Length: 622
Image (cartoon, rainbow, N blue to C red; front, side, top):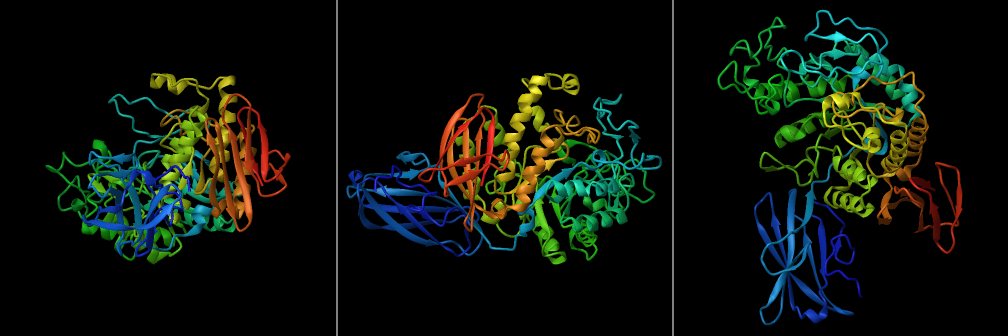
């Protein structure tokens, strides 16, 4: 054997099984230094992060393999979930030697160890990872009436013109209060279910819908009440029921780290007739918040005083949100929703998330629990604590911001192999069910619009300039071509492809609130809408795209090619992100290939498909 690596955890020669392992399962290691290095012993050194223990295992020599010496050991993973960091210690008979880690041979004692995620096997609903998700900012999607904000919490006002730009300038006090509403409704969303079904949508993810003083509704005023401008509890039940007839499920945003200062719980302005924590220390909600001293100084999310932070370990808060028979988590599941997305999961203690998961599964065993995590969720540290999101008792899946970051970097001139490496790191670190249940996306309510990101030649310096910015015809043409490539990768990659409302219509906009405009129902969507629709249908129809194994075919420079394989089905996604033509040959298991995007057919010869790829071209081959 002449493979160049001494140890590669992604190679079947060196480590099986690939990636994360269930508790108690066997892991086999093979370390293969060159024979000329004269190493006679090899020790596997493992540090268990959660238990704080260190374990050393001697690998047994299994004889030379060509120019290499092979050492082998089989190790049983711990019975409890764990994060293992490991490296190898190689020694010669004379006592000399070195350590081996990700960077190669080291003699300085400093290591960059490999990682093994050890997880408890548990049920993960497959419907989320299999289907297309569509994210809706409820106030801006569809209205069927012009609402009256009179008498509602918050000093609200409504845009009569649906095509207005969102208000973005601060008020006289310098505050941006997000009090301009467009009046989207739950019944408006329900009226568009046929169109969403045509796009292959299987899940609707709704940003917060509960009563709130702000248009984004992340400062919850009352968890028990749908915001009256959106509709009623009955409207939510009807939406969920109607969606099910189209094969679509609904998940809601759970904002449980903080409430609004104008809430029934805090009631800073006295809007509610009941007594909030800001009004009396005898309030039933006083224990939910941390005052120092009461009432003017209190913990708030990122110091924003309109978002007082809750004490997630408060027994009355835990009972109210999670544990009581009619808790918030349980009651809305019983109303017909199919899961929760936990806002700012980094801010929620592991014990809190674990309780939410238990309540979700007790109420609906097939409901899905998603978390907002911006980094690799297997190694995330928040508040000096290594998090346990994906180890089997907390989240089913997380938002895949690393996917977006890596894909956009590639499409803006980066190396496709960097994208591959970023995704392989996640595939290696995540339990398989979590990898296939990741929420992949090109944009959300917290990011600039994908068309603007990929089309704009520059980022304007001032907010006023960004508010007025519109892509030029040349920028838009380039942006649309790159968005089509991004969507192709999104819809054919493992995980749930997620579309932020209006991206399929080519909506533009920089950061909040410019990325939260009203849906352009009077527009035709140009070439993007049919592209997204076709990809969504393919995703919903082809099982291989939902659960198929991932194979990398070619990743270098502007060229990206990967395959999905399942039960004899084989597809390939091929992308040329450059501004010039490219030639690429990929392995192909049959005599012909059909590009499902253009209808063009290609002939293969001797198991190879040779492709001439024009600039900014994408193919989806079956």
